Image (tube, rainbow, N blue to C red; front, side):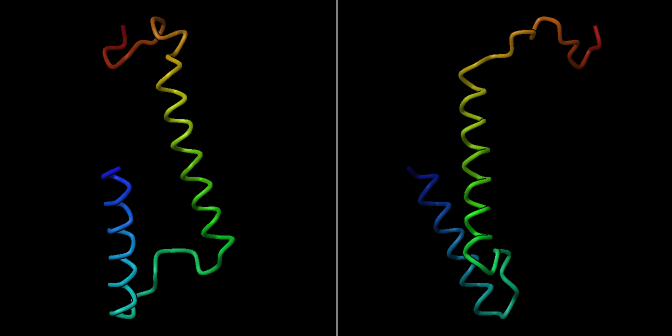
Amino acid sequence: MIRTVSGFVVAFGLGAVCRAFGIPSPAPPVLSGALLVVAMSAGYVATDRWAALHPAKNRDNCAGPSGR
């Protein structure tokens, strides 16, 4: 909950600062572009949560940083 609220505060704050100083906004200028950003973000979050619930099956076969 707190991350969501802080995300909205940062997003709207950044947008306000860009608008006040005439800096081009780092967001897509059309609705379809904004929806694409939302869809990609939702996909990353869903994949991260799915991967956390399903550990790798071949984890024991991975060499890791030592190379052994």
